[in-house]
Every structure is written in structure tokens, then in C-alpha cells.
Amino acid sequence: MADTSTTAPPKQPTSADAALLSYALGLEFAMVDIYARVSAAARDDLGAVAELFGAHHRAAAQSLTGLLGRKAPTGRNEKFFAEQSAKASGGTTRDTAAHLAGLENALVATHLKVLGTLRGIDGATLVASIIPIEARQAAVLVGLSGSTALDDIMALDPEAAIDPETYPA
Amino acid sequence: MNTPVNDNAFNRRKFLQSGGLALASAAILAACGKNDKVSTAYPRIGESPTTTGLPEANVSDIVLLRTASSLEWCAIDAYTAVAGLGILPGAVLPVVKRFQDDHKSHAAALSKAIKKAGGEPFECANERINTLYIAPAVELITGNKDRGVEASDTPVDDLLVLAHGLENLAAATYQYYVSLISQPAVRGAAMTIGQDEARHAAVLAQAIIPGGKGIAPSVNETTGKANPAAVPGAFGSLAAITFAIGKTSEAGTKTQLSLDTPSLNSLAYEYASC
Image (cartoon, rainbow over the protein chains, first blue to last red):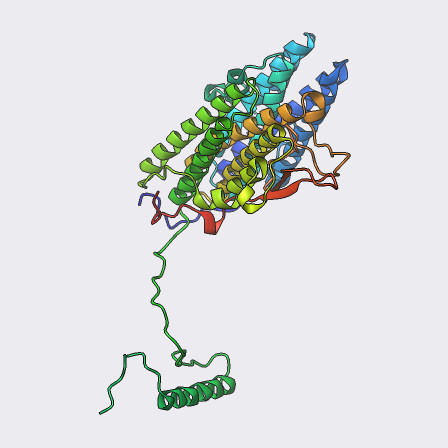
């Protein structure tokens, strides 16, 4: 059997894990602020949805912070926030929902990439609990963007993972 | 000459001997401290059937992937059965077809991952999940005269609720298995499928309660139970998945079912085959 490794994975994040989780945390902080901006500007149902989904990203950020402890970054990924919040503002409700769906999908792809690298069980378990919620949020936002196509709802592009070189921590 | 009828003949003398021995064993047990070694080979009355011990079974990444595959086959079979009932509206059938195709893709990806890890793919439904969860649920919807189960008065709604429950079960299973899988790459692959199941569940929740009311958690004002929600919380839940289906009782309630992620007695161990 190929997977008879006798070395159990570590429980706590390794130092390499901490770097990956910190990057994910910066993105979660950015999403909190992007949703806050959308929520403040929205004049329809999207406002309530943005408030709810923003709260979920805040909860994810708080849990990641708790896991990382003193090593945790305290701020958002600034470049990601600046670019994406501008794109999420000023359009129609459908445009905004479509953009937010793309961001949720990008976060899902990023977290999956992170999960596939993390060694510590605690970090992996936490990221695995965040992924399905962000996937659900993407599915809802696709619906709010006006699409009922299952291809759009199920779309997940691994290549859409957010690149640390494009958006450094 | 006395000839024994068979090897298991139990005569009075043997009975008294064994009884005496049993009493002696009991006395020894009572007298000994918990750290003392005591023979457990005391006689017993009657025939003892031969037993065959189960093979050695470790919960490896391969076993978890095989179990996930068995769940995918449960879903494939369930959607086939649901479509075959002929009661779903035409608009829902493409969704059923799409979700079934997704589960087939997941099963194929899992078989590939199992082979890559050196295991044997498990390409059939999980019998225990079928027996414990799916068959009773379908029976509550379609009815079973022989067993005195009346058919549901809202079969289409119940089928959607059941599908929603099963998709949530699949999503939760992948999420739970991340804590058990040892290889990081396998965890990532598992959740790539798990997030698909979560999207399926979100679509079904929106089909049950459309629009904004079906996004966040809410409570059914009549029953006091939680409604299906497309986004039920800030984190994926590993709690038991509960829902109510079947014929509505005079009190206005339906039968409550509860699904849990496959655990030790439901795993597709490596010695098991289809």
C-alpha cells in the first residue's frame, strides 16, 4: 500500500503552514471590507446578502487569527482590496453580484490550493470548514447575477486561485 | 461399553465437573486483584459456533477515499431512482441529470486517486448508508403497503428535501475526512469534490425555498424546525443532518430523519469488495 507512512501529520500549523494561512487571512480581511463597501452602497436585497456573507468572512478571519495567534497578520491584503473593491462598486446589482461570485470562486480555489499544501491538521480542518461556505456563497451570488445555468453555478477554475505574486501579503 | 453419541455429548458427570470448575473460576476471579492474570478458558454449556474474525482493517487514506466513492455511488443510484419515479416536474429533471453526472465524475476521480495511492477502487454504493438512510427515506416518500407505510402527500417536496440532505451529507463527509486524511494533496482533492457537493446543496435549498428567504438559516413557523438554507452558517457543519419527510400526520408533522457522516462501521475497508 502506498500510504503507509508512519509519521502522523502535526496538529499545529508548521512555519510553512503559518505563511500560507496568513496569506489566506489577509484575503479574508479584504473580503470583509469589500462586502462592507457593497453593503453600504446597495439599495436592494444584495445589501442584506453582502452583510451576511461579510460576517461569514469575518468569522473565518477571526478563526484563522485564533489559530495563528501572535503570528497572525492584522490587516487585509491591501492590493487585492484596492483592485477588487473598486470593481465591486458602481455597477448594477447583477454586475456586482457577478463580480462577488468571481471573488468567492477565487477564494475557494485559493483555499483549496492552500489546503493541498498544509501539513498541520488544525489548519487543514479550519480551511476545510471555510471552503464549502464560500462555494455556497458563490452559488448564491451567481443566482443573484441573473444566471440560472448550472455550468455557471458549478464553475470552479483552479487557475483562478489568487496569486501571491500578483497580490503579495 | 458406553459409546458417546457424539463429541459434544454432555453427561451429568461432565456437567458437575464443569460446574465445579466454573465455581472455582468464580472464586479465583473474586479473590484476585485486577492486575492478576486469570484463565478465561472456563467451560460453557451448549455448542459454540465457530467464528471467523474480521481481517485487519486500518483507516487509511485509501479506505477514506473508497468510502467517499461508495457515497458517490449512493448518490448516483439515488438520483437514478428519483428520476425513475416519474413524479418530478420537467424543470427539475435537468438538475437531477447534471448532479448525477457530477457524482459520476467525482466517482471516477476518486477511483483514479485510489489507484494512484495503490488501492483498489470501490465502485458501488455503500450498503450500510443505503440500508440505514436512503431506503427508509425513499419508502417514506413512495410508501410501502406491505410494511404499512403510507406514501407522502408532498412527494416532490420530499424528494428535494431528501436530495438536499444527501448532498449536505456528502459535503460534510469530505470536510470531516480532511481531519483523518494524512496526505495534504489528498485533502485538497477531497475538498475539491466536497465544495461541489456544497454547491449542489445550495442549489437544492434555493429550489425548496427560492430567493432571499432561502439563503440564510430560518425556522419553519409551523413546525419550529430549521428550514433548508443555501448558506446555513459561517463554517461547514459536521452536525447530524436532520429533515422531515413522509405523510403528514394529523398533528401536522412528518417523520424526522437524521443523517451522520460515515464512521467506522460504514467505511469501505480494503478487505471489502462490491
